[in-house]
Image (cartoon, rainbow, N blue to C red):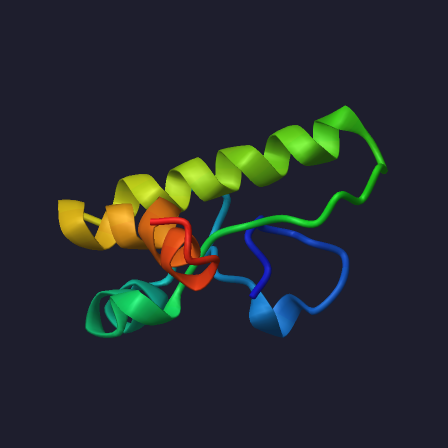
Length: 86
């Protein structure tokens, strides 16, 4: 899914309803299946502005996950489990 609003490619895959709000259907899905999601980004090398916007979008997503355990899973724990470093 695309993490930041108005991404020039794949508008059908935006997780953001607008610049600040995640679609409810995505939050519901994340809360229902928290062990299936991780956050990350590619290194596009386009600009620091683009990278900053990606990180802001991730922060907006994580702030909207109201369950602390789910938020931790999506932010770090699922990746640690996947990489077997936890």
